[in-house]
Length: 132
Image (cartoon, rainbow, N blue to C red; front, top):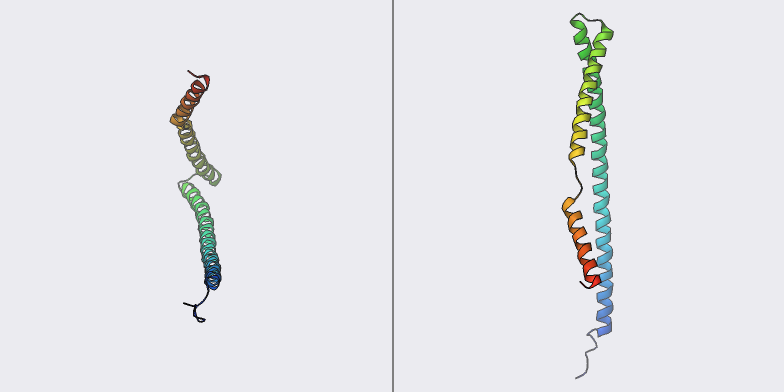
């Protein structure tokens, strides 16, 4: 029972499988690079659009603030006083935000249960080490 000359040897099969696997891995890496590049471009474009929207939002706030000051001015107050009232209102809002943020941060606590169980574990290991 001799081997047919047309049939590949085990060595050739292993070499072919290795070559095919290597080619498959290279193709998968190229696919991943292409997908990542496309994703990065989309993410960069999205971030740029968000930046543009933030800038336009800031401009809108400035223009609305000026309009509010002129609205207060229309009530008969001096323009300087009208702008000071709008600025004071913004400072008051900022103060409220700071106080609320400070209160929320003050309520934040670390991982109390994890710290407690860690202390208990250390104590248990110490007692095992002492042979209690």
